[in-house]
Amino acid sequence: MVNEEKVILMTKLASYEQGEGKKYVNITRYFRTDYITAQMLKSVIAGIVAFVTIVGVYLFYNFEVIMENIYNMDLIAFGQRVGKIFVISMIVYLVLSYILAVYRYAHARKSLKVYYANLKRLEKMN
Image (cartoon, rainbow, N blue to C red; front, side):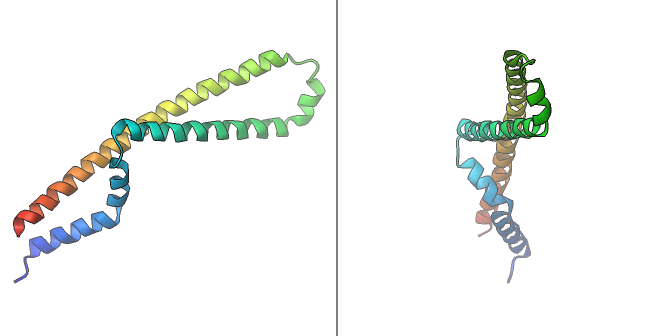
């Protein structure tokens, strides 16, 4: 005779393994600090690329105005202003990335605890 509760639990576990479980298993293969560090490194690279792209687009868009005023501009002050904007934007972006990485790791651990508890429950049904 088929145990309906067992079939439902097995279906639920298989669905989890094929869906969000794959992502969560990959996250929890790392230690917490290693996962967060890897995410922060990715964020640094993405932040630098994004900032350089935005500055490049800005310079390209205002190229004519910049070329007209290049001799009247204080280039050191302009560079310092761009540097300050870069540092502030990177700090904000890295704080948000850190919070997101911590949340994702904690959520993955919690989800896998439930998964492993259901596996134990399935094992006890045999």
